[in-house]
Length: 284
Image (cartoon, rainbow, N blue to C red; front, top):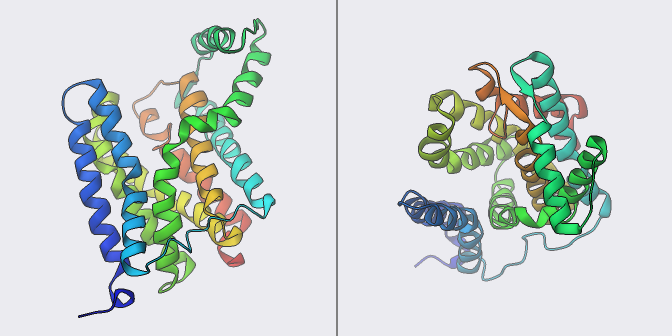
């Protein structure tokens, strides 16, 4: 019988995360909005559960996930960079005319929400935008707690295991493709029908975005030694894109639906440019 350390942790992890995510997607696709919420929650925490089981079974320990917090500069990069990526991506989308900036309805809703939450009455558009950004960048990160479930699995466990065998670039491509494929059922059966678009371009853009984002996430994880950098980056990108920029963006062309949004081509292109300009992969 093989010793625990000789067994294949990556294979075990992938089998477990597939099984757990399948259960989550099954629940999400059942009738009722409540089921969607519960199902997606199961999907989000599938990587974490799979990673914990795999680590305990093969290594008898949860060490190596990157529980340390410091150094602080990488936490700051993880916190600030997602807003920059989203800002550049959506600015290019608006400037190219593939989608339209229409902040009016969102600003009105945001002013009402800020008044209810903090008893603050804002009438200035610029002050409202700054307030929303500030809330999203602080307490808003807690809304993205699902990033904990994903990143403890993908960057806390899978990245480290792959790095034992492959280079940084190969690790990022493999884990990025797996991460994208993990979202495919969501895109095929929920996102694409809601958007009213063909699923194939969406799957391609998601794959490219997943791989490009994974290079950045893996760089943060490896350079800092902390999984919290990946968690912060993931949560911040979700909240800035979903809770701010997407709410002010409306596709004016059919291609705009494929370019904008967290699964769009523009996020992938922006991340690719950052990788080329910063030469992150050469610093590992």
